[in-house]
Length: 148
Length: 200
Image 1: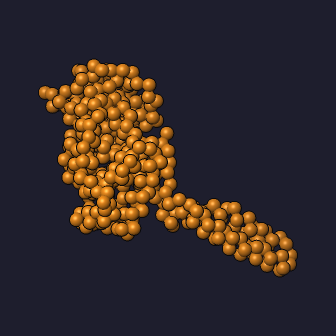
Image 2: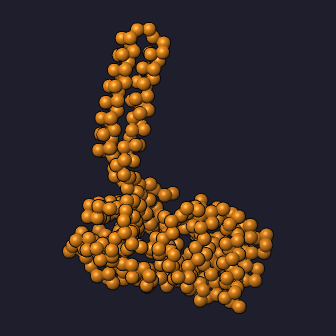
Image 3: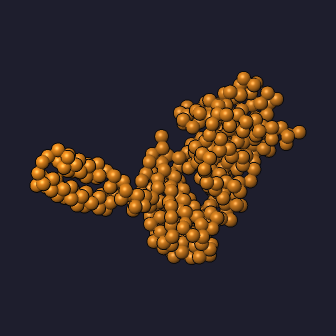
């Protein structure tokens, strides 16, 4: 996954993204590096779209990278699921992982048939800071296991 | 820009039956699925591709791709050029499918724009049932029409001597009731079947 074509985004962060970032920042005391406004990654989606800008990237103390994308439940559209599956596949090929947070889904969210069958796509419905950190650590440990 | 429309049905439906209904709605606007999916992120995901039922193209307006989700839900991916068109197409497709199927329980729509490579929601909408519109209109009219008349009647009955005044207050309550129901009916008639909200 080539991230050489970086630029700083001026996009205003949504409240759900700010909440997740606040929770992710707790990881910095454990030696993790949490980056926001990380620039573009080259991704081949098919069609014209050839890049993607993650919401955040978390780098573990041993250098493993986790791409974090925050989506509202209503924005988990078919097209987004398809794109996130491609991102997850390409991230995996590069030794990275993708974790999608859907913080507004709540405990009673209705699972979509498409998200259930989204091969290789890890979605966390964590909606509180206490659940975000374990979800990230679990996703990164998965990356380490695969790498080893 | 695109919209995604979710229709939840009251009962399961067979894929072939649903396809027949959609075909009869789409008619001559039907286009090949491969053509509609070409160039979209959807074309390379087999699970999504297999769920596709039919594609419809309205020249210079929209391309809609119909998917079956499970056996009791329909998802429609609508590619459009503007927010207004997105709303219009969601409302049009819902109206046609509801009329044809008659078993649509719940409808939600999300309008998204591509930002940073993936879609971000800019507007969400839902079809509001007649019963809900009635309840909302009635709640408003109860406060503005019925409550003052009922309060007048209660105070008159409690503090004013004489049956005539109390009876005339009761007549006032009855008149307010008739007026409120008439206004509720007018409000329901003029209100939109859809409630849209911009996402900031």
